[in-house]
Image (cartoon, rainbow, N blue to C red; front, top):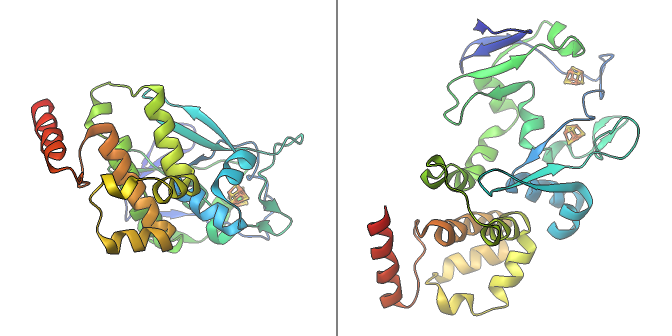
Amino acid sequence: MSEQNDNKFLYTLDEEFTFSCENTLPCFNTCCRDINIFLTPYDVLRMRKSLWIPSEDFLRKYTVALLGDDGIPLVVLKMREDEEKTCPFVGPDGCTIYQDRPWSCRMFPVFPVSAEEEEFLIEEKISCHGFRVKKTSTVRRWKNEQDIAKYDSMNEGYKKITLHEFFQNGNKIESGMSKLVYNTCYDLDAFKRFIFGSRFFDIYDIDVQTIEAIKNDDEELLKFAYRWVEFNLFSTGDLRLKDKEMDKLLQARNKATS
Ligand code: SF4
Ligand code: SF4
């Protein structure tokens, strides 16, 4: 562990830190307010399923969509419009969607410093009494307890898009593509209607098992959404067109530009 400034500390995966969030602490629930929580497409999938509402309703009611400098949409959880700007999901007994709370709420107070996750930042805020509870953990144990592996694996395909070398080279996608990323990855019900209500499967070479899987399982649908977005944005990935000539042309163009 190394100390930064302002009560901030850097930890590696197996170094121990002292923290426990408990409902008997005087600060209980006070941190679920006036915060920026960026939601991944998988967060949205889990949260709106927890509420049993369609993706479009969830996005409209509970989120604000912004745009990153690279054109990638940023979806932020909308706080209530009360004086304290409380999270819409906090109740007297804590988080009302606890089983499906977003990645950043699970990870708190641990923040990965980089995408490689070699170091993690913990800020010991005075207002958070959890740092005074004498219970230790490591980041690895913390991630296990918070079921982060599932989130990490479901975010993998999205990271392939957002951390693509196209963006590392300082490029930006135009607004039509930003909308495509948002409509496909975040508004999953709309994407499902689009692919099953159009000639999509006449154009793309998708095997029957995959079609069945994405029809019946939203997690499979989301993984497929990432593949389709990657194909559309960068012509990379493993999606193929049924038109072999066109597919060859695309592959050749991709090789030439890579
Ligand atoms: S211990 Fe920290 S994380 Fe837990 S409720 Fe209190 S302020 Fe929030
Ligand atoms: S989603 Fe749950 S854990 Fe996260 S801020 Fe809202 S109430 Fe708190």
